Length: 476
Image (cartoon, rainbow, N blue to C red):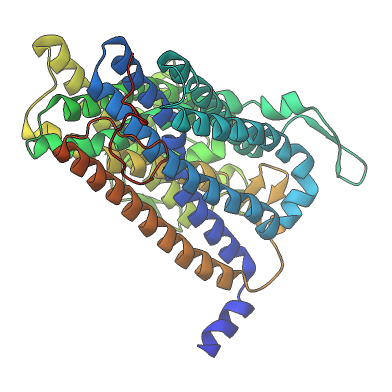
């Protein structure tokens, strides 16, 4: 044990800092879609319940708001950890560029607190506000979630296209234009890509357990509505995401050619570049394995010139200014996973809406419901792959063209120990979250079986108290 601790203390802190940041980001980003989109789906159920006097819609809305409170609380914890990690793991980056990089986070903090306040009002307002007044208290949560996510992505986009600052003679930030920092060149498409992904992933995640229940034979209105609302949101987002993703890929082709070369496995500048499905780059610069589709990468990059479109190669910059071969292969694999799973979910969306158009009902086949039940997991994997692609594709830069990763990290040893501690803590946090959500779900099912109807308690996981004259059922 002592030897292990000594080796961790003596290890280079840069790889450990990168691993810890990558792990905590990968964990936190699973909660982001729920924080951004779940309230919107809850309000849809709430609207149906009020407009149609539908008890199933109201029951869904109330239960979803309680799940939402739990995931929001966990997301707040993991987001706070990330905030501390920026200063602890990357002190040189924050010291040199914090004046610019921190601007979008200041706005994100305002949106976060707005979201937290109105989540509390919405949850505790179920039995304390008039129905439509209560409904409208949920709208600021939706807006704050969208703008908060856009603010965080603006900070990441700034790392890809740093603008909005001037440097003094010593090379330090002398002045900052907040609007230019936030609305940097890559921000609009990156923010749109993330916000749409939040609705896509959030919709599929929420719909998946209801698809599983439908697959098991629970065909009552409550489970159908619980599936239809989030799945419809996700399948509307899917084709939008295909368009936004295509536009973002072409933006990368035009503005970040080295990242694009890594995505498409292009070692040397050439035209008629194939779209290689899987495959990898060797140390000698050759591409091996995979399934090449001749000319498709060039054609997708710029359809106006078709397969003759020239794609800049990795060898046009020095080795220290481009991703390593290993990083290139990671980026390309993540591209394949993101596009592959995204296309599968897009096909599932077409199936779903085709059934609605021609049969006026959701598809009932076991194949469809099985795919729908797994869509939450597939969408999360696709999102994680897209995030890895974005971050690893920028290497070796933490601020593109201005600061390298190794120059930004802490020089303190012992980061390996903090990584192990964080790993264990997040494991406990993840298991606890799953157990709490599962316990809530079982409790709700027991209430259904007991016929208690609309839950009386206003807190996310409070005591079960049957409706009484002092705690009446909500009415129109």
